[in-house]
Length: 188
Image 1 (cartoon, helix red, strand yellow):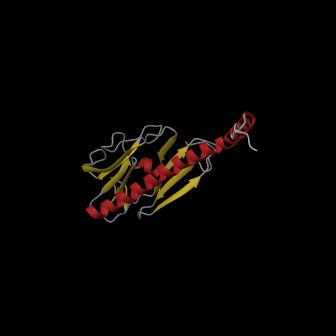
Image 2 (cartoon, helix red, strand yellow; image 1 turned 90 degrees about the horizontal axis):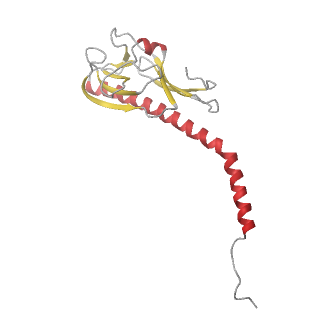
Image 3 (cartoon, helix red, strand yellow; image 1 turned 90 degrees about the vertical axis):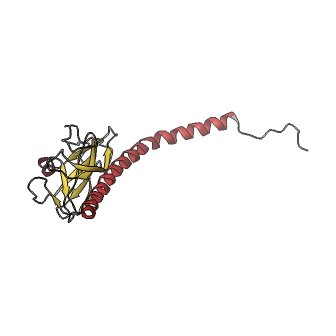
């Protein structure tokens, strides 16, 4: 015969054992979760830039005019980035000079992450951080119309990430490629 006061549930000792096991699992897995977050930010920023370059090329061909992809701190005109790296980008019809772009802004994106550093490659730096697509979709330097091939680096200074840098490489013919690297935590 069963007692009328029979209780079903978990004892205090069983509850404490479950909490200890869960705590150990969180401690062991915690660092792995932060790595996933950093890798996700890096890949997301890299894909955004790559997609923006494809869009800029497509718009140059569609509009049959020069379109620029460049650093912009105000999402309105092209400008040189600060030494800490890019603070945003924009896509707009090219004007007579850098900083004198014309027509409406086709797309713009400010960077809000303080952990991700975005910088120009050496050739792009000498080209004043401006990628100009002509009406055939080819990438040319702004002033002298010479072919432009280089990269934009997206990096997180974290030694635990592998990779901790993505490069969006572009060639003068308009070809884009994404390459990953590990820089041992150095983003310079």
